[in-house]
Amino acid sequence: MALTPITHLLDKLEDPAKAGSKKGAASLIEDFSSILSKNLGGLVETTQDAARLQRDFAAGKTDNIHEVMIAGAKASLAVETAIQVRNMALRAYTTLSQLR
Image (cartoon, rainbow, N blue to C red):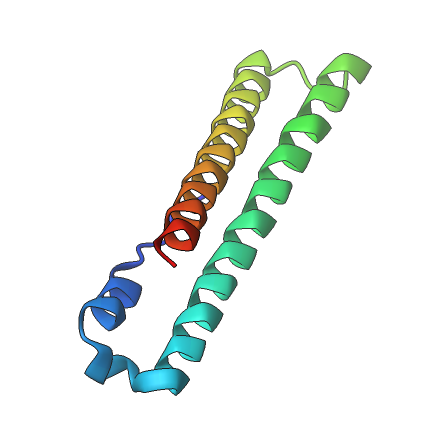
């Protein structure tokens, strides 16, 4: 699962003229939404691949324990990263809601 840089989103936040007022804000939300959707799809794919490799190993279809363990570690890291991103988003939302 590759991480997608969000520098182009940060540029829009720093310079509202680039974003183009309300239309730019909608564009920013769409960009964030598409990045989030794509990476969550990658998370699902990573965890499914790890589960498939574990089933294959348990069934005796493969004997490459290294590949199984690496896939499990990747899936675990991907899930942990997604949880941390969620936590950061919730913290940001809470902070913004307290500013009002």
